[in-house]
Length: 84
Image (cartoon, rainbow, N blue to C red; front, side, top):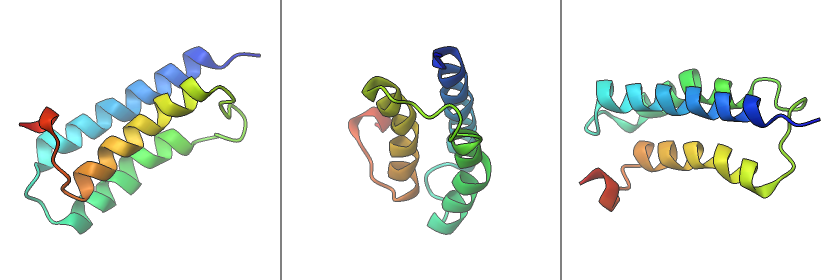
């Protein structure tokens, strides 16, 4: 039982929503606003029924966590080369 298409769809939705947040709110917004938007809009997408489709392969875990890492850097204002 493989959940690869489902995991890909979830990560694409989460990346899309995080991109919308970054473009709409920007990087100068207060940290609590960005955190609230992440926990309200992006995190539920990644966590919805995760007990059922829980990834067992490291590549899927990394794929899912890459969105979380990106948003954590955004919320904490950790700027990297990709944002310049």
